[in-house]
Image (cartoon, rainbow, N blue to C red; front, side, top):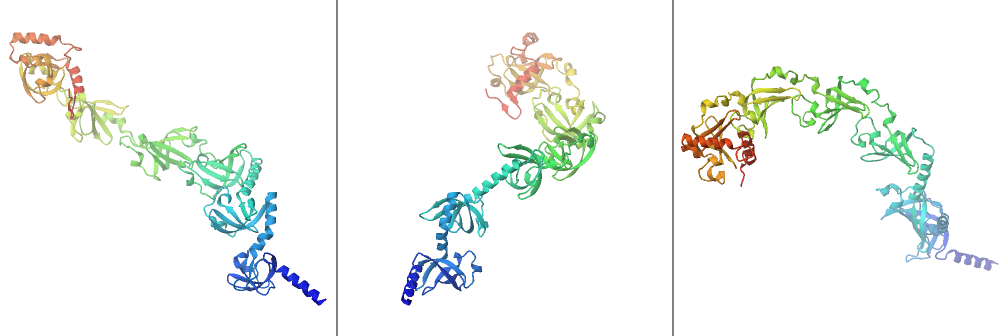
Length: 563
């Protein structure tokens, strides 16, 4: 009987200690990185500490199930694995969960390339794209945590398992979205957390669905960017402004939690009222000023000063500066208030006629020049303009630079005031008497005169005579010989002698003839008659038209056009 019992024990012992079988053992010794396990065999085995879920809680004597990998290694010890025993035991369970589409709980062990390693009874892979709806940047935050997972792929031969946490989250959020959309209405107040911020608004997590809080619905006050008011993680109470159940979109409002400051705006800020505020934004066209929480007014650049030439508001104002202004206009529908700063002071143009009397001689500095005249600064912000026609009684000026240059200190006469358009007309020639009034006392037909060629035109040449009076020598009056081109016969600056053959006081023109310098009075009379026959549209025009044509061919500083 004893022999039989001994044989049975030996048979059981042999069966229990087959390589590849799962056996029970006890913790014999706790070491720093491993545990010594006694399975009742002639030698003990060692299992790494990281094969235990909670190595710190393992105590001597604890029972463990292990896989007998080898009965004896080179050192005569049993090779054991707790992890492989668990994998074998759990594989069938994992296969069943996968087939049924259920969930399995697991603990994240480590970060690997492309994702995480998770222990769900067997070592499994969780791709980074399947961790959350938005793949996280820092994967280490998940290590050591336990989650529910869905098994999306298994390989029975290789015992590989691929997990997904994202599908669980998406399913949960889908259920929450449906529940949320079915329970709320426009006008309801809900709570959420700022999830993301863009240039046009912020997305609010409403526990399952994202709502858009547009920048225009964040505050009654002006916002340049949503980040000025909210930041990611902020908890907000918002109002539902619109719901699109088909597209699962929700529009939210934050400013609607407060009274609209634009209600009764005309009563609180009537036109003409003086207000105080802070500069909140500077644009090329004006400055925005907050005069009340949520209410801004615009000071247009033209309303900053009556007289100063302000190119940009930033030249005189700074962000955050406190200013005082006058309400010029209110538009409740468009939520706009027009403000003015210059209205705080008297308009100097209101009394301009008393300060600059027509006919009064004034002094100023040439500030700028255009083709039609020169602007003269009479005082800061008050300019007068000298038109080219008022520069000289006798000379036809094509550009003010022929007589003036920028920065010149000059004297002039006030000849007109247009208060409504804030214009003062000045004249230089009015400083002197008009020489054409007494022209007949200075020049007579038949007089032999000397002068300098001042301009050339295709129809003739202008000769500057004594007293800066210009006369015109028509091309036909240059020489007895035929002249094809004026520039072939005369040059600018050349001194010539000519005879006066025509004086027209009304038209302010003097006709000259170089070829008639040696004519007798009888010949001169004939030449003058020929001169009179020339009319506009032919070769000869009046001095006014002649100078206009000359202007097309002559520009100060540019020289003469090439022909």
